[in-house]
Image (cartoon, rainbow, N blue to C red):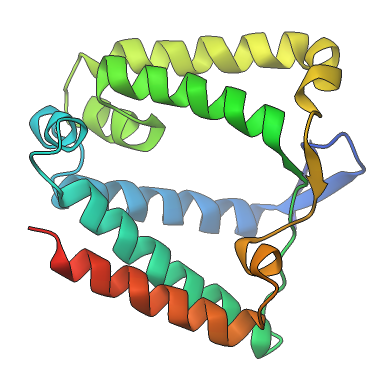
Length: 188
């Protein structure tokens, strides 16, 4: 089987990605994009409606996805079928990244996933967001070694919300998932 090598984001050892894993990742990405498009989440009016707090389709979808993913991942972890591979929680990097993401989302009303789907359905305004995404990724790759010391501020180690709360992981994950699902059902 063919294998591709890629460097881990934290500069650690190189890992091998088999062709079958790459095909599975591509298939999951295509399915995700298809579902985003079918759910109407790549439409500018739906996304801008969320930003203006007039259309809660995006929030309902996100809460449902987080609840489903959280319950699934922690159940698989408990059954020994999956394990979490966490990156360190770095407040500085997450604040800066969140700010850049928020500005881009506010200006374009597209996030990277919805922008790619919008471009796929010939919404040419998303092209500016995709160009910004590629340009920003390139710039980060060029300057990340110089920025890294500034982005390490607030390093809390490998931390999840459940670790932060200090509660048992699996029951708390299911409870949080249930609460998020319930909140999603209350939205108009």
